[in-house]
Image: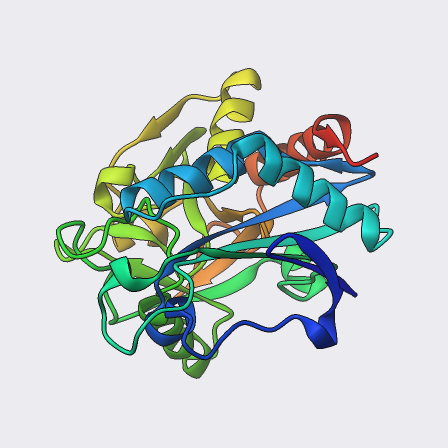
Length: 289
């Protein structure tokens, strides 16, 4: 595998960062995960824009332009001779002192990995997956802005551990008010009475790019949609539920906390949106070549 690292492509065995890098020491950095299908990178410009927005929000000066980052992503995919797969794009604060002061980190570091990915087993996409509510809450926006995709993911990791220990594949995270924010790595949607509903970003949800694609596709399909607060009760009593994310794509949910959702299998609205999403990913995007 070839990895793009600070201006050059290197073998994965040579892709190293300093132990003094603040991305490693303190989780000080930002990232994006994006997919490419049939020789096209899906929503590449949107992902790179969000990367720059995240960097700006944490006062991380990017020494590259958005256009250059786009070129580097495409270059990395071509170097690995891939047509379908996943890209992890990471920017760290760079090397500095052992103290927290980010101003002592003179130059950010960036690396790009292009590979294949299989986030969940195929049967989860076919039959639906089990999810569980986590006691670990999403941080308050006053503590950590949910729109920043930062390298500090311990909150999500501990919630993921809870879900796995409960025998579920994914965990639902609540905000401090008890409303559903999102899952540990995915946005959440419910369907009831033909209406599609997802938590607003103000409740702690990441403004996911796949989330927005699904909202756009639902409107195109003539489905009523809303972005308003969701409780666990709303999920328990929903006709359908599914999750979205760049890595996960669109995945049905069959149970929450052992309670069957709808018929306990992927519903018609979910299936319709999965089909529309697959068509969208295979027909649009930035050409790799």
